[in-house]
Length: 253
Figure (cartoon, rainbow, N blue to C red):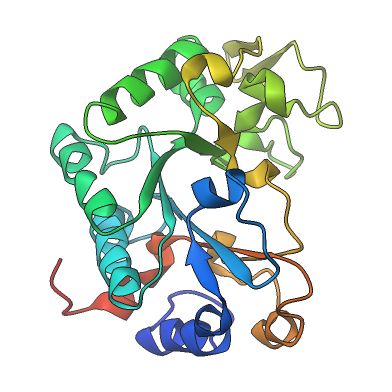
């Protein structure tokens, strides 16, 4: 298994052989939220970011990954990032393909970061994104995006995008109601209810026994360690399609 991106088809096959195929079920995060919390059940999600050189192709890679999972009998959640280059009406209409393949679609929340760029209220930005996405698919879940604006120049966390919700306050980061600044722009964080936006859960806050992620293009743990401990507690896996374009070269979408 490659430790860093770009990941290859062989890496996907190794994940399958050593984790996915050993599970009783591989399910989307909505199923975890609804109570499918068995030790031998894997909760699988994908944050469809736009941070790598393959940003423009992230949506296409996500669809290719969704087809591969469907062919292998797995279901997962694809969190689509509002404000990303692929966030177009045409692609949002194609998001129905994820559902047709047995997957869930959620929102990758970037409201506070986008408020700096757009100089608008984070809640309005996210409400508009949800309305756009719900024109085509059912959306019950969300997860915060780790936008570069979330950290200052020293790497210190300034805010987390899920702080805009009452249900996911982070007092260790800062006062739930505060003003964050970037350059000459100031954004008030005034938490609103996630439930009022029709969102039932945030994937980062669901209970789990272990967690494997390729965020930043590098695995959070050694696959050997995760595989050796499989079944000791429910495993949640996050992969970002940004890093997996090479695994689907030549695969039709």
